[in-house]
Length: 252
Image (cartoon, rainbow, N blue to C red; front, side, top):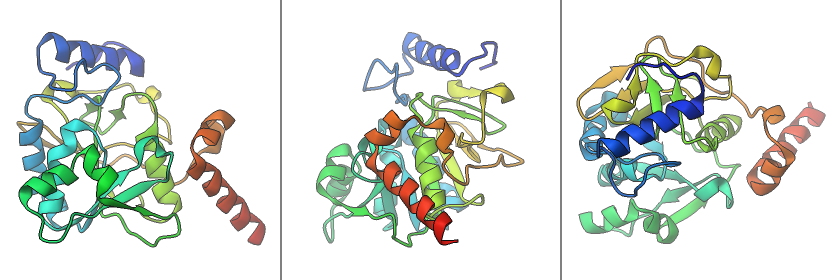
């Protein structure tokens, strides 16, 4: 798509409407206010599996949305460690999916769903020394430069900043998104994006793989001034992280 509208929300509405009107969207529908599922999501996930960045990774964090379900299955099938954010971050940052020993493909597919997160996972604490090798996220719109627009709640950005704060990711951690070709824009206005926004390094569609070069800078910490007290109170892990940061400042 070419870009003509100049707010993130305008781009979201444009993509959502186009995907519904052209019947590109898949269940759950309508796709408004979601990371949209799409025709070809399965094929895009299969392309990710072929990437050297995927093959070289051991621990991979993936969003819990429908279009990325197949890549979650492929991660489990490859016997890699799969981390999925807890819903709305209410009960922590992320969970490690733990399939039963010698699981069949059917069980692994179930573990890659929201039900799997509920029944086959363990919480990862903030003090864990876990290292995330690869981050895979959903998007509503992306540009070939690497700018990304999500559904508007900011969870993917917060999750990355939290992981950076706990040392799980850094500026070199690769971020991949899988989207339909219609979600890819030649450009998105630079002024719409700040240092808190997570960019993508690789865009994978049902038909192509796009490497975004040069890589855009990634969040290295939580920008507290962008968060309201109401938001912080809704997400207990944010309060814990803020207390940890304040403690570190006083000790240093």
